[in-house]
Image 1 (cartoon, helix red, strand yellow):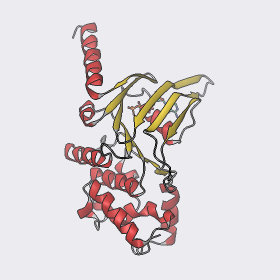
Image 2: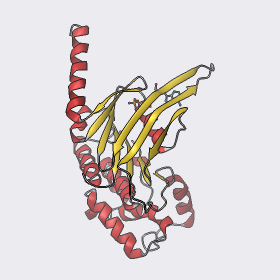
Image 3: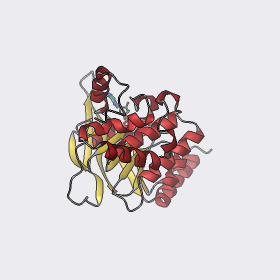
Image 4: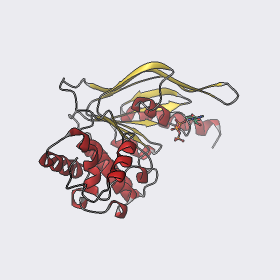
Length: 270
Ligand SMILES: Nc1ncnc2c1ncn2[C@@H]1O[C@H](COP(=O)(O)OP(=O)(O)OP(=O)(O)O)[C@@H](O)[C@H]1O
């Protein structure tokens, strides 16, 4: 653990925060030396069910198949309650699918919706360095990774700032920087902009776009209900009632959604 960065912490704080952070950065082992496959996220006929209190089986995901290539940002769209977050949690490994299989390149990181659930350390720099403690890196390497990651999300000039003075969007960007510092190959992003104002939304979108450079190894799957964010993606999946009913490049998905909207308007004679 980089002692200089964490000198203000007590051992107790570090231990508690460390076990908590395991939830965010999943499988943070060293990246594999083998060449990364072209597909970073792959799900094959994933289903997920729960048994309700009255012992009825509730199907939340039904036969969901998806593929996200390395170097691309894809969005997962759909109405409230259609299963987007559940699918993301299955891909993160938080939930075990009832049927189907999946592969997600590692290390993979999950960034939660609430910015206050992302950050655990007193300063920006310490928070980004936090997950690197397990790698036994030289201090120069830690510093270099932290600076590079903060630069990618546009937060380098805030490196010494106390975390609690940041806006929600800035906290999200610090969380993304933490994942990049660990050289995460996959970012699973759950409705990052829900609690943010317009300015912070744009900052987070820019941060994600910089983190997923076109020909790079990092892929991201972003759950959103904001259609205006679609224009930043390389492609999207559209879900309804637990199923992926459409996927494709952004123009095809936009066209599909416009046609859906106009059918709806005609149906209800609006
Ligand atoms: N633990 C649970 N017990 C019972 N039902 C659940 C549970 N988790 C999710 N659900 C149900 O599964 C469905 C899908 O939930 P999920 O949160 O994945 O949807 P979502 O598309 O992400 O919704 P939103 O856009 O509102 O966040 C919802 O109907 C939800 O109520």
